[in-house]
Length: 198
Ligand SMILES: CC(C)(COP(=O)(O)OP(=O)(O)OC[C@H]1O[C@@H](n2cnc3c(N)ncnc32)[C@H](O)[C@@H]1OP(=O)(O)O)[C@@H](O)C(=O)NCCC(=O)NCCS
Image 1 (cartoon, rainbow, N blue to C red):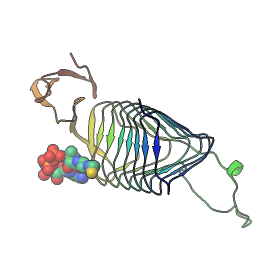
Image 2 (image 1 turned 60 degrees about the horizontal axis):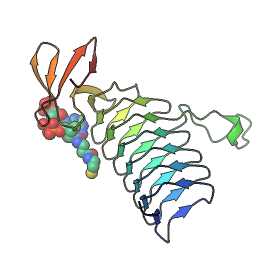
Image 3 (image 1 turned 90 degrees about the vertical axis):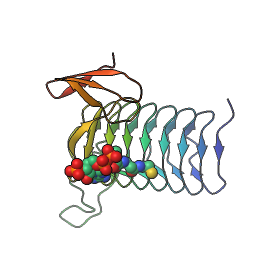
Image 4 (image 1 turned 60 degrees about the vertical axis):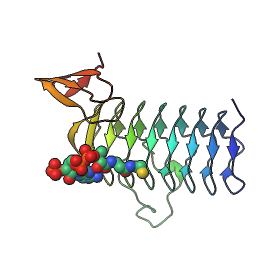
């Protein structure tokens, strides 16, 4: 696999680790101790905070902001201008007016599990988890954990369907039995959760 390619205008801290085959486009910033796996693509103007951990074959599209201590597992897709926040009750200052410093508050990272996709301009509230292969619609605001394979949309995001590993909406062929029209994989729904494929 080839060495990572980093555009000349990207700002990658020397302590960050970038995996082979990864591409970092213009004006992207990768902060101290962040880890990007192999074959990742970080789009123009994207931001990856200190210590953020990103797996292999992850795409972070243009101008997305991934605040620490977020974790993106393998195969995750982050659409353009999406924001993974890290502070539920943000304040710049204490009540006495002094500027809050990093050790005056506790950052809560978003976790995006294997294969999940977030559409364009999604906002995820600090500390929430997006389940495996879930799909978050464009413009959604996620303020609750999203189950594996859930298709969620809106503000706040609500489940409007299920998607399989291929990212296609599943069709219910019998009570609690869902089939992917693209791959023919079958998933089973139980108590609001989907498992599979079989
Ligand atoms: C959510 C999504 C996958 C649904 O695709 P679809 O199944 O073809 O959608 P449809 O247009 O048939 O809509 C299905 C329903 O979801 C609603 N819906 C679709 N997208 C929505 C969105 N982004 N937010 C809220 N509701 C949405 C539709 O209004 C419709 O509701 P209705 O049945 O009450 O009329 C798609 O709209 C989406 O947002 N994809 C992400 C695109 C994106 O950001 N890509 C990033 C790479 S550039």
